Amino acid sequence: MNHLAQLERRFAAQQQDLHVHQGELEQQNEALRQSNMELEEARNRYADLFELAPVGYVVCDEGGLIGRINATGCAQLGAACGQLVGRHFALFVEADQRAELTRFLDQVFLDLEPAGPPRLELRMLRQSGQHWDAQLECTFLRDGAAPLIRMVLTDITALKESQRSAQWHATQALHLHEELQTFLRSITHDLSAPQRQVEGFTVLLAQHLQTTDQMTDPVTARLLKNLSQAAMNLGTLTTSLIHFYQSGQPTEPARSLNLNRLVETIFHELEPERRGRQVVLTHDPLPTLRVDHQSMHMLLTNLLSNAVKFTRPRPVARIHVGAQVNGAHVLLSVRDNGVGFDSRQEQRLFGVFERLHSERDFPGQGLGLALVRRIVEHWQGQVWGEGVPGEGAVFWVQLPGALSAAQHTPPDQADRPFPLGSV
Image (tube, rainbow, N blue to C red; front, side):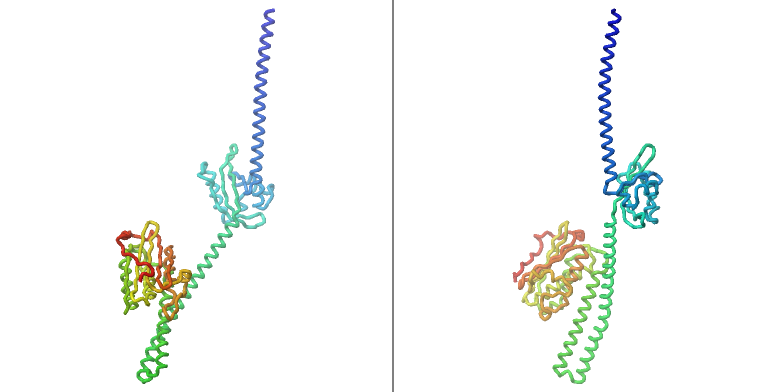
């Protein structure tokens, strides 16, 4: 009897253990079902992301055979999925780029831990033969023992067409610029010879009329004077055009240039324009710049010549050259107490053949400030002017700080510029 009771107790305990294990098994089965559901949902999400992505997804093996491709990829290659799987991806790349694609894919397979998605731009072919441009990004995959790569195809046809169009327009603009420069060079060269001939014949005609006593006729004398002046004006214009043309040509190597000495040299060169006048030039301690000397000489010559010209009505002409230097830029200025100008027309000042004053009052060709702007823009700087009618003007030239070879004397040791309208 006791033995039977023990058996019943052992059976009850085993039955209890079985219930416990059965409960644990049901919990594990429930967890497994939940995991399977989540895995299925993840697979569905991945399938949706893969299939419905706005870019082409193509999975290839080491031989370049297409194993899987999404709807966008099918549309890009121009065929149904069943027509693409098992075919070589290289068949849809232009023939002259297939070797490059092969080298690229070999590198992807060899590089097991790339720094980022390798990219390659390809000229592609749809099954219909239509061309399009793609950016190819590859990710190395492992599917069991077989290595695979997933390609991401992005259609960049519009971008490449825009780039090709921009390049074409840039090429056309370069050709047009070269034609314009050739035309300008030809014009300036062709004008020089007849201009010198007119000047020479004018002198000979004057000498002939003097020997024949015909210069006493005031009309003849006036016409001859006008002819001589016109020939001189043509020569000046030709010279200005040559300088304007040269400002767009390759410059000499940059060398250190002390602007203090350059300003004084230019002022001395302008002596014929200052003759008979009282012109006072002052300047700050100016910096030394690393520039080509010819361009900087032309720039400052035109600014100082303008200042000398437009201060002609003043009993005492005052011109001041200022400078400020910091790490970001070099700022030069040329200030005068001349006739000034209306600041609302400041943009016209730097146009080719633009004039704000009459030729009779202030002769010139209207090329000086256009030349200044061209030189400054070549140096990637800026130029602008400020003026008050009847009170003077100041022209500013801002150049990159990289041109500066040395800092100038501090401002408190520099000559003080005079304000507009101080004379």
